[in-house]
Length: 120
Length: 282
Image 1: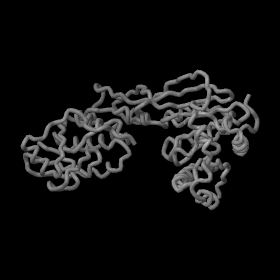
Image 2: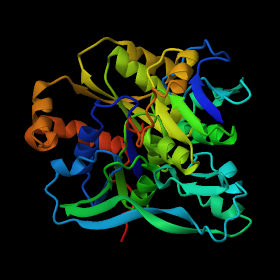
Image 3: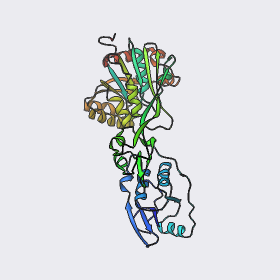
Image 4: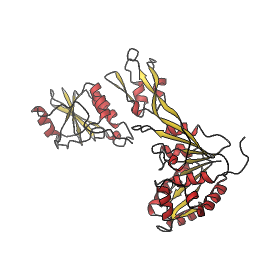
């Protein structure tokens, strides 16, 4: 099972990026193999629109079955749900902390977007 | 003659200039309200009943039985209005600009289009003025297709005054592109100058001829005037900073009716812009 975290850099100690669509990148942690891969999301930072949808596509392609992030808007939520990816929100400050909470079963899966969509 | 009233900055007096300019043209004139996100020209005219025409764009619908999940549509769409996730297509109609590209690139011919309503074009008559307004539906963020629909109502040979949306992004550009001359309304303040500069750069890029109207003359400083002198841009009208003009506007009244001393200023502007001059359309 792989889990994607919105992260500011390629490290478990990296800050968890509270944004999803415009996160710096995604740290995809493979729980079974105990290794991780960082996927850059830089091109989405300045996207005029559709950053959440594009990011959902990126996470979907990574093979992750779950996403841990700060917030997630309605379009990103729809795309993630269509990909069968489970979504967890957290206010953890680092990826490692968020991962620990996930392992302890302290993260609650969300069933809807928690922030409004943004328009250009 | 098609005259667009634009500005980089909002709140400089575009609508005041557009309405009062149209009012002093001594023959039939079309007044287009292209500020479709918040059309307000009707507040200043006693127009008769309006004809409403809904406007939509074509958005894609994917037939899941024909789609093989190849993702060509998703790679084509720069607006991310259609994505393929786990070989299943997902459409976001609110992101779609209606270009029809996904339809063209789909190898399986699995996509057809349906109309998605984005707003309405309202046409009404107020004396010599034929008013055409675009009004975007609440929640829709796609102004240009509606603006283009409003501009379809331009009649060649009929003088036309266009109230443009503020700023220098797509809605403004679509609005002013067809104008014979663009009037940039500004105020003599640092903010006014900053946004005027952006607007000037934009209309120069578009290759349109343009002039400047300075509103609230008397406030701020002389930097707008210096800039226009340096750049060789004619200032065709200066509207004084007169509290009565603001009061008139706030009541939804017309400056040229309420404050007749300004009527000649707008007449001169109309003549300078070539409105009401030349052969009249039958």
